[in-house]
Amino acid sequence: MVPTDTAFAAYSAQIRQEVDAALAERIDFGSECPVELRAAIAHGLLAPGKRLRPVLVLTACEACGSNRSRALPAACAVEMIHAYSLIHDDLPAMDDDDVRRGRPSCHAAFGEATAILAGDALQARAFEVLANEVEPGSTAARCCAVLAAAAGPEALVGGQMDDLHGVAPDDSVAWLESVHARKTGALFLACLQLGGLTGGGDGQQLELLEQYGRRLGLAFQIIDDLLDVEGDATVVGKQTRKDQQRGRPTFPGLFGNEESRARAEQLIDEACAYLSPLGSAASPLEALAHYVVERNH
Amino acid sequence: MVPTDTAFAAYSAQIRQEVDAALAERIDFGSECPVELRAAIAHGLLAPGKRLRPVLVLTACEACGSNRSRALPAACAVEMIHAYSLIHDDLPAMDDDDVRRGRPSCHAAFGEATAILAGDALQARAFEVLANEVEPGSTAARCCAVLAAAAGPEALVGGQMDDLHGVAPDDSVAWLESVHARKTGALFLACLQLGGLTGGGDGQQLELLEQYGRRLGLAFQIIDDLLDVEGDATVVGKQTRKDQQRGRPTFPGLFGNEESRARAEQLIDEACAYLSPLGSAASPLEALAHYVVERNH
Image (tube, rainbow over all chains, first blue to last red; front, side, top):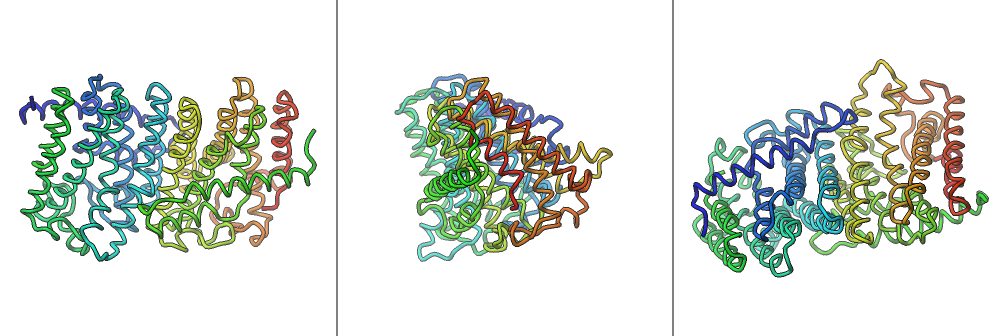
């Protein structure tokens, strides 16, 4: 049974609260961390947000029949990687964005050097949290390997590099899918893997979660492109129509708005089909998938 | 028995060769890594260097009576963290250095955005290598935790932040020691811990290695400050007298050159005293300590 929109909204609001508290605890550094650095880290990490990735980690853990508290450190680690990547993406040398989630981006508020360092620190902290808190140690190591691969040069960083330099390719569709698979998709996939691993999922459960995650990640990005075209900056919380200004290929640009949305919806249907064998424990993942295509920010 | 200078030179040259080959192997990325990103990573990571930190990891492993090949992934991970921190430290928004190890710094050669991303990728890759390659998984997790703490906001990043902003403190000596303990010392200490952990060291062995590492790290930094004052830029391989230009407190500035050198030598004597219980297996660590105070670059 898929929870109703209202039930899912309440469920995810509850999870967001748990995640926000857990994140705040994990950046309660000692005096060796300069005050200004701590403030910049908090600005980037604790900014109001959907916490979609942590919610994914926790619901994937539950989908394996485990208690989501087991996945909380992994959920925090993923959000730290996500927050670091946003801080660095916004830098003047990169996307040069002064606004993020409706507030000044990290470098706009704290200066460029501090923003670079805040991002660097968040990445390190993500792995420290995973390595220290996930039990047993062998699972912690697997989680670190999964997250590091998703954050590395063949995934997150490589995708950002290609997106930034926007090499005009012969095949825009392949280029676009490859950039998204690395820049957004890999971390989405890692969320499902981390949730599955910390939830003690077996091989089949992990495989189903991964198939779901691949499709969800791509659908998320298609909708993100659509929001950039159709969205209202005050609702989306960041500058819109930037893709267009940059001449960067987008799904709506290549396929039109309607076909893009249809494609996202189809991906979500496919994603949800993979959840069936997981039974009712996976209902929140199904609701989350529908939320992803229906969101307006 | 401490190896002669010549014997240690040959030993460390052999280790450097092993490390350089291992590093090159570990950045042999697939096609998902953009070519330019791979080039920037290689530029930063494979630049000719002393490989002091990897040598420390490997000799610490041997000091526990283990084969140093067990510590090779950890040695690579530490050098990746070190290389990433140099790339980011050199950025225009940070120390703004165009020269590093006698060659253009990463951003001077590849641009700022690529340099930021190369550093980010190296940090992720460091944890991937540790998590995937150190055996057993529980040791891999401990290694990740140690390295992440050393690279985090309370250590490496926090030290760089304070160094950069050079807050004029009431107590320059305490400020200087605190910055160095975090910016340089923590990673030195992590080298010894990683070598000890991968070498299967027991509690007492790890404790001795840590005591040695704390003193070695501080001595290294005092000598670094001295080289900045006394050194020849063409030999040191980076711009000298920068500390002075920045008005940053330094050991020679606070204590004079002679007393600083005497202090470094005393620290090295103390460091080496901790090695005695480890017997002849720790001889290379002793030789390395003497190299650290006698080096001219």
